[in-house]
Image (cartoon, rainbow, N blue to C red; front, side, top):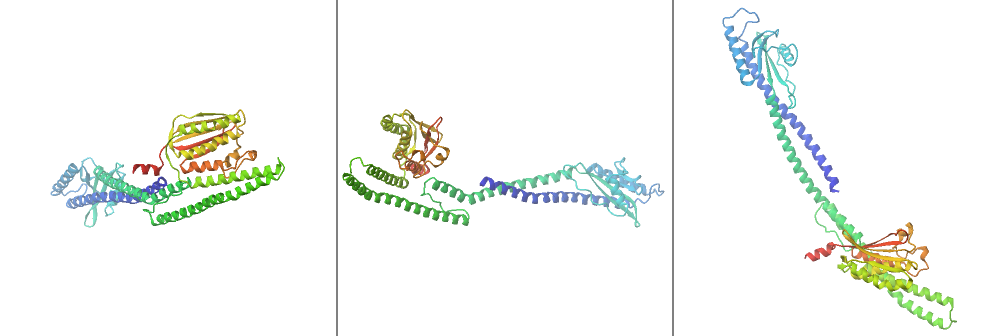
Length: 476
């Protein structure tokens, strides 16, 4: 969830910073150019004031003081050009003759930005502000101002400035803004990480606790600490729900255990009376034999129900166990029964350690091997193999029996379920359910699959590493 939430927050923060940074960058560029334009306007106004004293026009006749004033104006313009590198000139109305200009070969062109500014100044007003100069453009900045004498425009002052320094200042300002944006972005991302961590931590704890409960650790609860008030309230509600579910399951287990235990005594008395009744009947009576069989089957069901209730209620006594040695013992224990039925039972059980309850795992393997031997026909084989696979150790039991269909594989392990093809085989349908309950208590599992070319493949898995609770207790 954090990987999906963080990009959304980062995109929103980026959009906000860009919405603030782009106008700020544009405003900075405009302010830098406006400062330069105002400076050029002041320079043009100063040159216009000097040009007012040069009274003769193109081809004028008064030369006594005019030449000195023109020379002074030309000297000012040349110094201005030499110091600042700015082309400047005072041009008569026709635009083809200069009162003074620097450099001397610079005149008003027939077209372009300089000509437009010159024509605008002829209308007795200062030229408009030039277009904005951007760092990636190689442009020039033109400012024109009229020279007015007796209310008439007698000449125009034009300055044509390079923009390298202006564009450099704009670029440096943008770099400062960019650095500020990056710093703000990093700060915002750090705040977003802390915020999402604070918000999502209770969700992660809740998810982990839900997984623990789903895998059989019903004592797990959510620590109600940290996070928004809504999530703390959700954690408390979840704990209350888990308490209620655990209480209902405990009641169910207690009922099954009590019912199976209490029914055993009346059933034992009933079976005893059946035996007494059988003494009054002829030897080999078919009906009394059928009653005996059903009574024994009912007794087996009650015993299995009690075992199932105890398996679901008992806490696993986990420890580091040699799975290979334990599986080898169970193979040796079931070998006589397999030989009596004409089934070959073999084991490949190298030493492999894992965390398991030895008693629970032994009972689970007994149920699985019993089923394999029971349903494998005479002359068939049952193989038991132990191997380590990553974080788990597996005990794989394969047989060459009739196997199960895909629909039957989906239901195998359900309580009281038995395949319709095996209804005449002795059993209560609770053995694999007990196996699953015993393994789940210790963090293990049992899976069923087809075994090629025929038969069933049962995989019992137990963890190779200590569960969280065991690891924490060992650390203390």
